[in-house]
Image 1 (cartoon, rainbow over the protein chains, first blue to last red):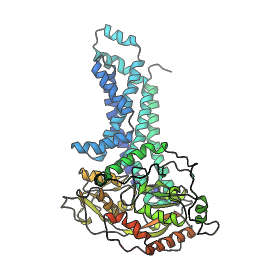
Image 2: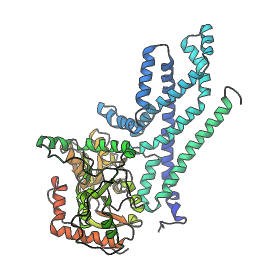
Image 3: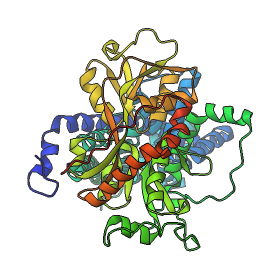
Image 4: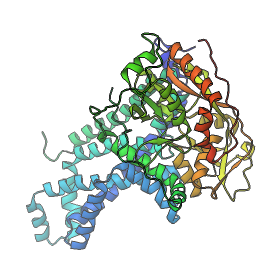
Length: 226
Length: 318
């Protein structure tokens, strides 16, 4: 019988349920990966719109960023999971969660990338134009490669926030880390703290790995060697 | 002990709803519960309430005296109590537009707090969801929990239960036009919804292992998912399902026989045997003097007029 106060029995609830944790961990990892890839692509596209010479594109980009960035993520989830089905857009809850997370973090990726673009010296764009490059070429060949180097760290922060924000999916039908932790706390009411601590460790594994990757990428790719 | 979760004091005099408004209100209850959940998650931090102007002295409470040092005496002299209940459970605990929870659990809680001599405006209700009830009791954040709270041995390891005061049973709710699902044995390959961390969610895993389980944090989301066809059935205690049906009587129906016995108890701190005995005595008295019946009729009675015989309280020794 597990004792509520101490000893090894406290972590039995964790050791006995490692497979359950692994399932939740993998789902959190996949949620993060899919959403991050989508947000990175869409965010870069949106940033391109925001720095483009076409005013309607700039306005559309700015409107998206301001609306999404100033909406709580829970509300975005709510909208995606309960409003989209009403207009017959129906996916699995996992897909819905990826969509909600991608929609939300696209705005943050956009702003990070845009900051990077603005950080590239104007002379670079002028030189590219003087060489006869079009706007897309300028952006793709000259500006963005330099911009991304400058924003590795900010993008890492967005990624770390994304990993932690996947926990909201637990309230919207996805049994990821937080969801399985909740289930296990019910099954083991005396070991709530051990179960939740194990959940925290899993999140730390993900976020710290990301931080290590970001540090490595920054050292390898830094525009100016330090 | 300020709990920055909710305002329980009444700000404006309640106005009697017009008949037309009443039916409209019924229909929008699921939507209301959904919105309430949403708003609660947004507003958690913003709702501190300074009670310094609380004026009431325990009215007519001096009649009962409790043994010195007992929880009852402490609560009586404090003149206030914090009760955990559900805020999204129609018929049991559902927060209304004034921010006050209504329902059978709330009425049962009031029977106990009245017996303690605590005036109703000093009873603070805070939201407890399925997963945080034991921690709230263990940390002393609530004095008792009346929240469709099934008594079981695992929970008894960390808290104690007075009661039971009601016995529910797990069953299934489906869309009104559903014909394929007739009970728990017809769930293979079907998408079944329940609440993460709840007893029914754990039971359906063993009762219908072939069902595909979808878990939310509140039942109102399950009802919404069932309505939109995202899931095929919602499973939990029949009492709760009746509450969900109450808001959408033509959309849903219950199917199959109950496949569990869920005695609802009142959760209190572990080893507070005096308080437990007091609650049990109060409940037993309320069974016979009409207070229990009144609580039932004004809440669950609206959907299920036949009141079941109240269950005998269990004065177990731990």
